Length: 296
Image (cartoon, rainbow, N blue to C red; front, side, top):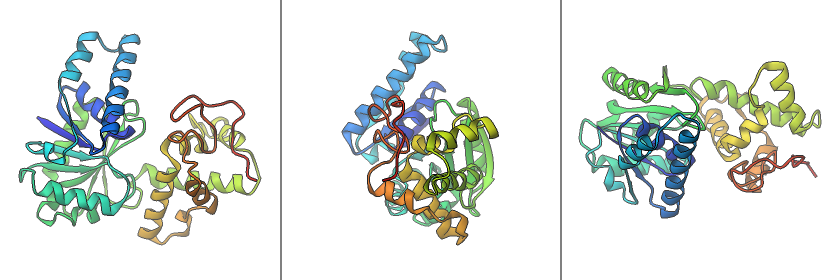
């Protein structure tokens, strides 16, 4: 089976890695060559860490990389049984990609979108003749570590498509849950408003970012706190999710806090830029002690 992953950012790279380790032939596609180079380096580094920890052998690493094809052309997805897009969380961009795929994919190819909050049925509308073979396949960051995958059906998705993707995810050593389409699905419908509330608590000068996270770790059992989670996911993605959920439901609990908007406009996106609610030595680097955000 050939699987194509479109988008070689952090998520796309790690999803590609998951499928490679499961033994699938994977084509990773991104029009930006630098993204492809960075993704390949990230995959190689992760596989090397797996060897150091005794979870993989050198032969496993070589076998995985032998199954990887990298391309800068969307047309390289032709012949795939399953395509998963992991591009930017913008509906227009996803719809444009769907139309490109419609022109090159076989009729029975399944198309998944890794969107965390956008309405999947709106994405499927771009390819009305394929709507029954479109679904949500939402991995969580970091995808090579997190076990959960939300497999999301629209009102039009065939049951056979759900079953096929459920099998692919299971064989990739992940835990799929099948959910119906709804704003934020399951995890983000709970998590994203929690992050928004944590932003509000900080903006109201009730507690520092580190104390907010410490409170939720020690008082609510979170592995990492909501503001560290926001930095990990990316504040731009958090904002996009909240905006989408608010537009979908009109519920004020999803209205993004103004501080979140200000931080995104200022380029304080979290780990991906080296600074969010906390500071990192470099993009995706280790956290700088005492480098938490202070509102001026």
